[in-house]
Length: 218
Ligand code: SAH
Image (cartoon, rainbow, N blue to C red; front, side, top):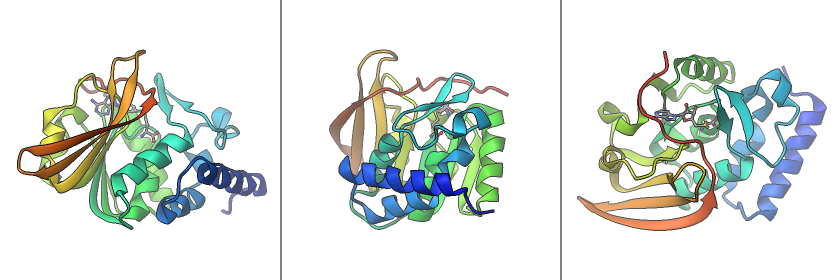
């Protein structure tokens, strides 16, 4: 079924806004253009899908504002057109994984709330995004059996960078992660694995994410 006309218009307006806000990677812009954000929200929120803000997705969690999704994806790609393997921590609605899917060979996404995992799996399947694998797992541990990854995007904020995620980066791989106290200042941080145990850390925008929490919700 094709998207209603008003959503197509809203998606075009969103793209123009993202370009004005400094997003320039053609693949990221194409992915946002091709992805129906309204289908990652429940009915009450879907009318707000193209607003420039974070939106509630249930269970006290939020889908990040489009600019933050685009910025994190650009930081992960670091100017490359595509990556081979990418891991997302915090599947939530499934929207960020849907943006990553066309930009990588294989996308892996982990989520601690089981209901979100099943919902995202169904949404990705319905959109024909067949290169995404889902797992209900505590993201502090990453996905060791699928490592190494060219990029890891974490969409919930820990107070400190989990060591397990650093160890699952390939040489040259990048971890894009908000770091800081819940309710305090969090910094979007990029850690690049130079080689072995040598890493380089860069701090970017001030952001506000839900906390990365331990344990599973079945
Ligand atoms: N990327 C999501 C954003 C969801 S909000 C999207 O596109 O919609 C962050 C998500 O991280 C929430 O769903 C939350 O349940 C999840 N999360 C928090 N701590 C986690 C952990 N330790 N492991 C996996 N997921 C976690």
